Image (cartoon, rainbow, N blue to C red; front, side):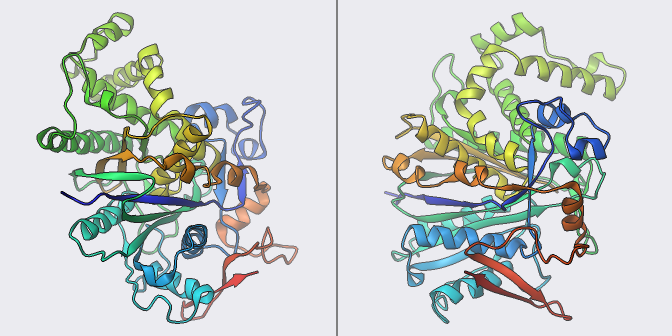
Length: 464
């Protein structure tokens, strides 16, 4: 019998600075950001689903975010460095073209645990846009399933700073953060099924050239790539799940009926909501409930009925909007997905860290609300531009609620400081503050970037 392996605990690191895009209580009220960009703030909240975007301070880069998330995870679980076989990092905002973020993180952690304490702990950096967290996790699972753990655990950490040019269409979908996962045998939180779906293509939907600190994105094209790749990955997962007997849908049932809580890659909340709607539509076709939906919103658009592709895409978008307003969709969405997206609404996009950060928020919220998830199967959908999607499933373990209530995720979102538009733009452009300040907020018992030498080498320390 295959050993149960999965996620034993999760720690999310959220920068303590944010730029407010919209006031959640008064969406129509102009914010400093919306006035500067001459935009309607309600479009941020209702259009893409974001109210605030997290920002790194001057002393924070992707390595710092990762080290802080991992340090919290290790301290909370009293992890001795010798018990860790791997500390792997997933990121698309690395700090060096050769040296991985994992090596810098090792160095920071050894400042707390002692020089050489992690000499027997391996580490590597994974890159495939936002999907790299799924690749890193799959590698760690395969390593454990192969019987190579010998009682040791691994930590997988996704860390990123999402940055687009000022005033660009992608600017409201920025953010930053890191999420660390403790992966081990007999996990307290989630036991992951040995069934992982994949769909990969070569696409030009999003990239960041070596010479640039900001990304290039073809927004609408990227949305289409996301949905197509996610459908392909879920189909691939479904084929394996059915063949292995993990899930068997009965008459009138959808495979999604057998999945409880679900998390998706979240460039912005409305995209994840749309992805879920796309999957429900895909799996509900032919079922009695889909006939009920059709009676309300009419038949699906057929591409052959339109002379121009743009006309069909407009009809599709309108149809999806109507479907997402139905009671059938809303019932499943509110039950399975919505709670987790609060993180992205409050923090923005964190690239590779977005899906597992929203999973953390989802599980914490369910636990605080007294949900009974033990024994239920859940699902994760990851997407990375370029492009690739991964779909996986897992079973919630008996001790999940006790573990989850220690996340402190909602508290971290509450205890942050807003920045002014001037502060935001200075941080974004990496310019010095006119008043001579070195940072916006004083470091609080955390790792910080001290300096970068003329040759590009980075030095870090723990700020007590």
